[in-house]
Length: 136
Image (cartoon, rainbow, N blue to C red):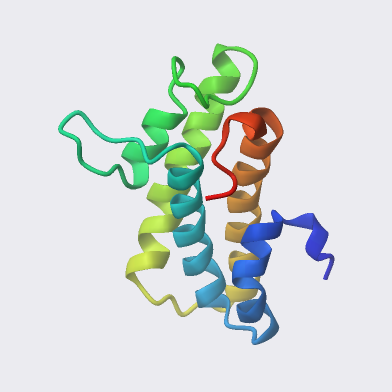
């Protein structure tokens, strides 16, 4: 396993679950960690009524076309990254945080979730590293 292939903070968070082959925990902890880290890095953005943003709403706001942390260089890329962030939390985060999945392909699935989560964090670090609250 080449641990340098993943976001270092995310890897540190899930490494013990990988070592113990606890694939459900790898998937759920990845979803939890990515959402928490994005919220921290981006200054804990709030909704219109001052509520803490979670899931789809969090990624919709921080990766919006006019958002400070939008990813990519032009509108098509902004929309794509926003879709990845929102899709990650809707498709993967919701199921893995709220259900224990029994899957024959649990290891492959867990590494897929880990890869998508790492991609989001990696791109945020790459593009907006100097503006993120990385030391939080």
